[in-house]
Image 1: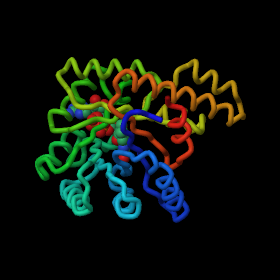
Image 2 (image 1 turned 120 degrees about the horizontal axis):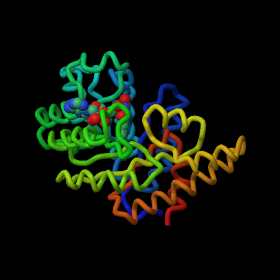
Image 3 (image 1 turned 30 degrees about the horizontal axis):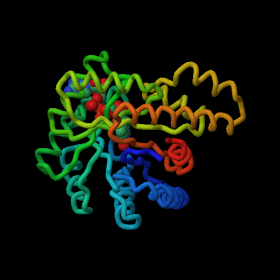
Image 4 (image 1 turned 60 degrees about the horizontal axis):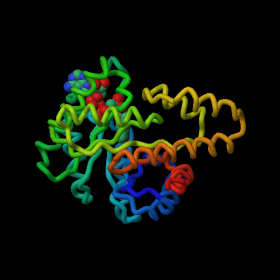
Length: 276
Ligand code: FAD
């Protein structure tokens, strides 16, 4: 059982079956009394109504601190203003503020270009009402010019008023510790919470990781590849690996852990059960 606070991330269900699965997952993860549970948001508003409805259900049906993600790229000030109002009316005090991803040619065409502009907008519209979470990239954001400029861009979001950060997932604790050291050297003192992705499907993980720039260590990839079709062996190995990393992160001072659940309870529960 982890000795630090936890939060869990979900995506908005699109079908009744997915909605029922999410309800079951929330029901199981509730036992860990998460600080908050968050729901992702498609860039350009593609999951707009599903995200707000999911946050509403998290709060009213599950009595959890349902927290929306908001992405700004492709959205207008009016749309984001309306969302912020809606979430405030639902009782939300926390928001995960992100740029989002769009086809590369379209970035720069909307009213917001980067997440620091969204953070600034939220602060200007709602003062201190919202606790603003931002994204962080210990292994560097894939579109960043270089690691140093990514750090400077991270600082822009903090200077705009972010309260804490959640990292992209990683499997290399040293990258996290180095990132935290680097941001502290820039005078940034907000909590940086590791984002943890339990592994249940190696092929899917490889695909995700290529897209978001997360590195699967070569030794771990070799081991998982070596198990071939033996999904239980992959899961067993991966659960141990991720739990051991969580222990190192906690021992090294991580303030809390944020789990990317992919709406499944078991992979996250298995990791949590193995954390000393
Ligand atoms: P930014 O901080 O804006 O950075 C994006 C890139 O631009 C970086 O390379 C940065 O170095 C550069 N940059 C930043 N500011 C400037 C500037 N002012 N000038 C020049 N360059 C700049 N995506 C979704 O679509 N929906 C979600 O719900 C979602 N949830 C997420 C949750 C977490 C915890 C994380 C870590 C990511 C999530 N993402 C989500 C993915 C995220 O939208 C992408 O990683 C996106 O590419 C970057 O978002 P950001 O807010 O970190 O962007």
